[in-house]
Length: 295
Image (cartoon, rainbow, N blue to C red; front, side, top):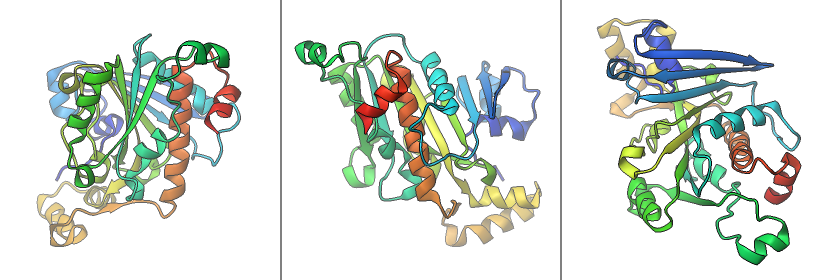
């Protein structure tokens, strides 16, 4: 039975480290471990079940309540985002997910903290000293069950109207290990699948489907119950795997495991991601200036 994970790092762990068509670069910066994994071949894509491209995984200390002081995590995440973005032009930030389901609320909570600057132009920008800001638009897409609109359809209509150079899409992810919840962050240039973290996959948001580069950012907030059971029993036996799946997914319902303090985890993660995106997009502003504009 397949072990489910949205992290390219974990997919590589499942198949071993020596995979043709995959290159890996690792870096330690104080208490942050950064892994830059690049999938280059079609065979590696099929084996890992991931798209071609770059996946950056930052393994962080447990997230803290406040990021109001300059923080090494903020610098590291912002730098990795900046490397994947076009140098100039309008950027659309899309917060994906459902605010009414806490593990799936990472995207909209992040979007609520992003600096929207597309409308700050001309004399207003000059008089306020904000004329150097990069144009940024922000949207929280909601979910199809509430809007009746697929996330891809929603974003494509906005793209046709405002013509951004790139999208940064933020969404919750699923991990295969409880130890990675809330202390791992993945950034990729391969797009993102809305709802993947809570097992409700929709049409992928990619350069092919939207016509512009899509940078996906996510933090694992759940572990699939079947995956957790398989890892705990450390088995690949087909009969035992089927039995475990039946036990942890009663009546065919897909179950996930999430931490008791998930609300705090999502709040912390959304603040780190929002600050990092703002800092990546507006490098001329100090962190203290960003904080004053955000709060």
